[in-house]
Amino acid sequence: MFQLHPQLVNDGILVGHFPLCALLLINDAQYPWFVTVPRREDVTEIFQLDDADRAQLLRESCQLAEALKDAFKADKLNIAALGNMVSQLHVHHIVRYRDDPAWPAPVWGKLPPVPCTEQLIAERIGKLKAVLNADFKFEELG
Image (cartoon, rainbow, N blue to C red; front, top):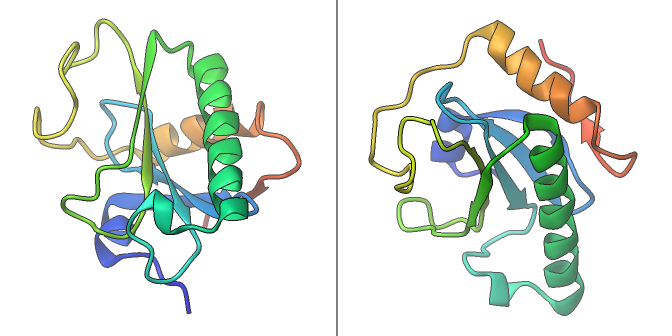
């Protein structure tokens, strides 16, 4: 049975679900930072997904990336599947601005995370609600 890695649960807020992936908002106010996690057991690498799931992962990643670029007026998007700290396959989608705290370096290890306020969480999710299509199912925030 699929379960999110405990570190992803700790670092993220569940936003909702694409057909394949769970979508998390990473709890760091410095960047609009989202992670997609294919809901498949024991998968650590993209090549371990079957052909249909690989294609679906790419569709969902591109759909999210386009939504983030539009909703957040990004200067650049950083999209990566590293898995060095958390081996469960997950893909980071980070909105970057030329004036963000880590620019132009990668965000990892640059600064300690700054927790999001409830208002900022609601704003970031609200921006996605305006641009994600009917294939995406939002979770109820409680």
